[in-house]
Amino acid sequence: MGKENMAPFNQTSSKLVLLEAGVRLSQEKGSAVALKVASVCSAAGLSRESFNACFTDRRAYLLALLQH
Image 1 (cartoon, rainbow, N blue to C red):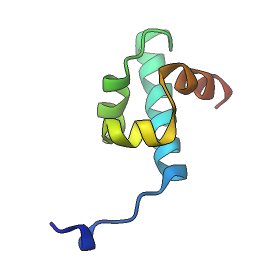
Image 2 (image 1 turned 90 degrees about the vertical axis):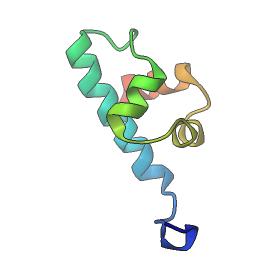
Image 3 (image 1 turned 120 degrees about the vertical axis):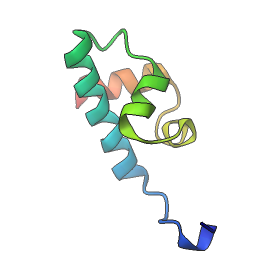
Image 4 (image 1 turned 180 degrees about the vertical axis):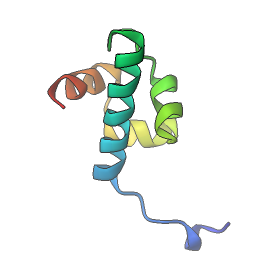
């Protein structure tokens, strides 16, 4: 599939998908602190690059997750 067929990156929807994945994983694990970025990306179906475009680092993600 060429780039012309790919949907444009939407940071807002990607951020929401990553946060919802974090909520699910936190409930499964019993804690958000134990979340790994790779696990969140996998559960969200998004790449690490998408994660990095939405959050500066894991700490920023965890803070956003707490506010979500």
